[in-house]
Length: 269
Image 1 (cartoon, rainbow, N blue to C red):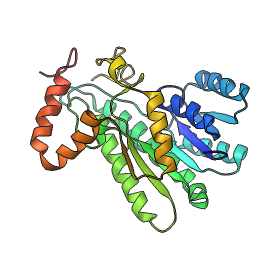
Image 2 (image 1 turned 60 degrees about the horizontal axis):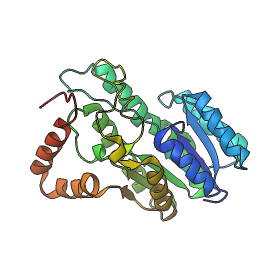
Image 3 (image 1 turned 90 degrees about the vertical axis):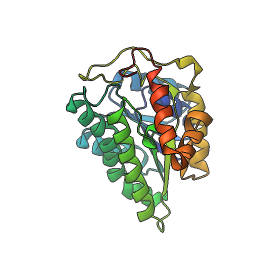
Image 4 (image 1 turned 135 degrees about the vertical axis):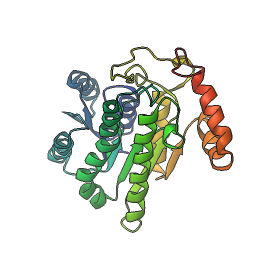
């Protein structure tokens, strides 16, 4: 990644933050985006002190104009774009029968439309560089997770978008990677939306037993370098689940239901 210009959305925490540090360590020039400008500027200062080149842009990826401004600001500072990591995302936890439809709309606006907007405006530069478009997805993009209807829908939509983009660009040299980290220790569950759209505040899962964001960032960097099509992390909750979904879908439905029902204060039993 030395001297590659990398845009990372959702870079103020979790996987995005870990990717920023890992990619910088590998010599990348960074264009970082998130809604939390204070956190972005703190990260920028931390990285620039040790010699990395970093520009930050306060960005709400659900806002098309913000995404256009992010790309313009990146070009203004670095002149080109090599890699776009569509990482910004939010989750939810509620049964579909209980959820306010505005919650699902918000998830689609951030998780799906955010990736579409950023990719649309970055695409001419990525094509010129024969670069990479990365979508940070989830196992929820391969199987419908109960209690996460809006989240799974947004990730399935992202998959369809990125797979189409890949096929349309078979002869242009554009690389498209769909990455599904599985359950990763981050603040995504604390910020997950409830049925009414409020943040749940507490994670229902044992974060200390999950893969760390730093580990995900290393795997992601390797996958980009190797120009992989798909990256699925963790064996049981990731690769095995996706494999079984193809051959034993009813079994996976039951396993997913039972697994999610074990969460504290689960919306279903």
